[in-house]
Image 1 (cartoon, helix red, strand yellow):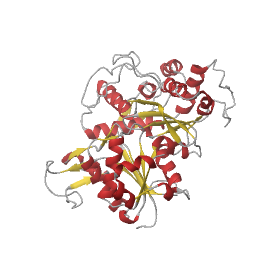
Image 2 (tube, rainbow, N blue to C red):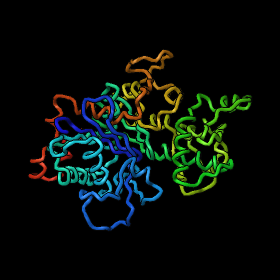
Image 3 (cartoon, rainbow, N blue to C red):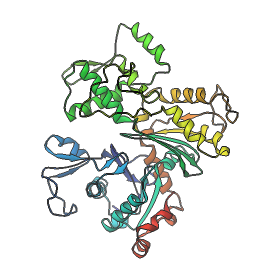
Image 4 (cartoon, helix red, strand yellow):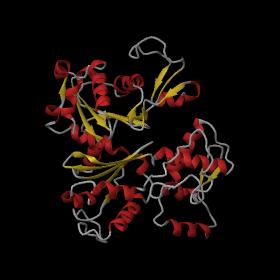
Length: 406
């Protein structure tokens, strides 16, 4: 298939690929590759070996493969593995003819110039694409809601990035990156459940716990009130396994997501009872981590004064780790509490789209926000004129891509 524009968003946990102008990616798959033989076996990845896997195929066969994550911390950890993943994504999952298909690459905040050039070279040299543009995930998260200015809070598998965006461009000096993200929460829940006697130990068990987290956890409006109400309960929600065993989360149903707003100062934090045990999945959070509301305030205050009311008025949530019920209400409440007394902000009980109001936006498909915004960008009439062409790349090299980033 050809004739469209490919939009590619490769995150640490999932890869989303599809075509510009469409409302959702055609494929969402695990950012994972695996092989049944040791690394170092000769042969190009494009001479596709039958025992190599990527995406969901690698995840399904994980028990008998050597699996690797091409992207870690939203940075490319292994470009050979990224090549393998993109080969399957472009040739098999969509499929399309890369040499006839312009491509928009959604780039996470903090990408180095060297990594950007390597991605550019990979796409032109290996896949021979005709045109390439790169847009920041922060900007595309804003575009997903029809906005060009605001705070983009993008929280995925292993990173939360909070960025200021002004008229479609990320403000490079106004960015906060944190390890308080999806995997940290899953790891804490994994350890908590093991402490309660559940015999979880394998990667498959870890994926199960991640599913439990996604389906059962929520953000409390008031932690102390929620704990008090829990003590009065006589019936508790549970997660039912295929063998009909029930798993009860109790207080961890809301204390796990509480990490996003109140990161523990140390692993023995009283709130997170049972989280002190270390294991192969544990992510140790830095003692200097700050909660989301404080991070939003920090990013806004790092931005020019004339932008700040506009930024507070458009706080857009994106990424799979923002899907917990109650998350936008809690963030909005906490930001308001932190910024009371700021004369630049007008606090209104009836939240609207006013530019001088603290306003958190959490639309239903926000787990796909970065890709959806990329689809919007790549469908604009001027898009192809902003791209680096194949001819320009071969004449000037990958360094020219830095002039084509928005």
